Image (cartoon, rainbow, N blue to C red; front, side):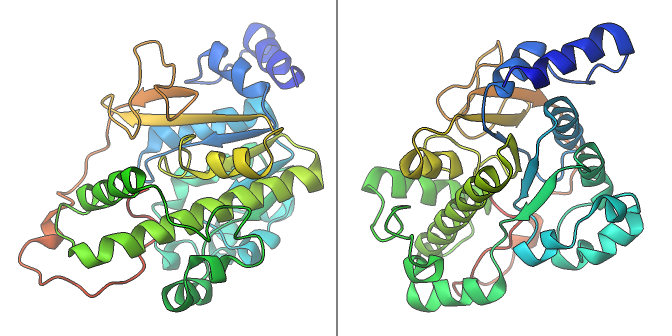
Length: 293
């Protein structure tokens, strides 16, 4: 598993194509893993530039996308990736609510030879989760992934607090537990897709996802550790102004939730809490895939 790092180092020294933003020590550690989670804030262009650089350095055989359903991903071919407009249209990217495709397209280009997998929660499965519970929605492997039982009270409380904070402390309390449940379901779906990709391609596998899902303590990597403890996993968190779930240390080492953390400036944003001001509490529902991750 050292070959991708050697290739990246050769590129740096001889070809003048060093990754823009990647410490070589972090690339080296990631190259030793079979599954590499690359966290992000969904609307941060620097985070996505780094993900593209990682994909170029690691040369994954598979990429798992939080943003795509299995059906979306099955359409992707090298020829489709070569046509940005056609790819964006085929994936219904804008209609499905994800940020500007221009930020994500370089990742597809960097991994054009890889096989692509989708792990997004389809609407019908989300409806089933609301009505019958996340274990039923996930299917026969729910017990293996721990979805048939409640979280420890401390973790449940911490995760509900994060959801509330991410939604400007404007959510009715009754919404928090279902939202945490849906996040657990998405974590498990990402882990299952990553393990399938590893099994079918031999890896390495890169997973493109929000920072919350990339957490090693309770996100998708934790599910892999439970279901397939022998699989080598590396998780990168990406901060804005030094702040992300799980924290960071000055040398970029993860502070418990990630193996490494890299920082970037936050993009200019409108006040995310403006939409909540003056609104009546909404009924419980599944959060959008771009929220609180």
